[in-house]
Length: 263
Figure (tube, rainbow, N blue to C red):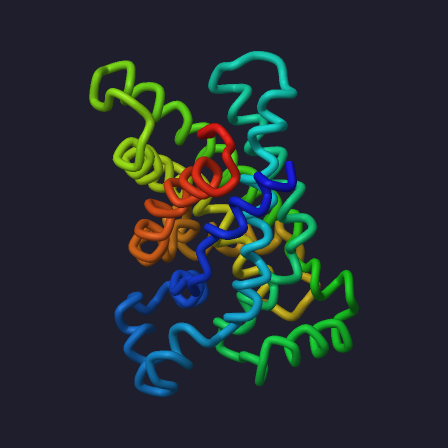
């Protein structure tokens, strides 16, 4: 419903992910990359400013995928893990297909050749590479990544809530239960989607027509499966705190502001 969408949009995280630099530069540690960014551009411009507007726009993706999840879950047959996983996969894939341009800009602004501003990035990419070819670059890998992340996060979150209550760890729905389940789901989701995330990042940063199979083969040749997990530690360090409070905040906004049931 509209209320569910806005409830999630209000709680969507708006932080810049430092993992992108580590995915593009696997030879350098995340700490080295962070220090270089701060030394060259300062704390805000180096770590937060790149693509900040694109991150804010991309928050709409979080609002869409989580906001539409309960309704789709109820519409699908069954009430098990597979139903929750399917609902999360569908909302994540559809949402990211729409919001792909914001992700392209976010990646480019965090890469080695950023544009002067987010609007300048959008205009330059559309002009130099074409609207669809440029702004929807890497959409296949990005949709796969979003589907894996959304499905695993939301399905694990609901399953963890039920399991924690079943085994007596929590007696009722509330912030403590939501934080615990959200923390668990965030770790599972990031580990599950990291290979597709790395492939998506490399595809979007490159300004050429190389396809996903070609880039995937190149990444595997560079370091095997471990290369696809480049940036996993900064990803967990950055997204861990965000994910831990994201779904609990959504739950409270749904329940207290919009009068909806918990997810």
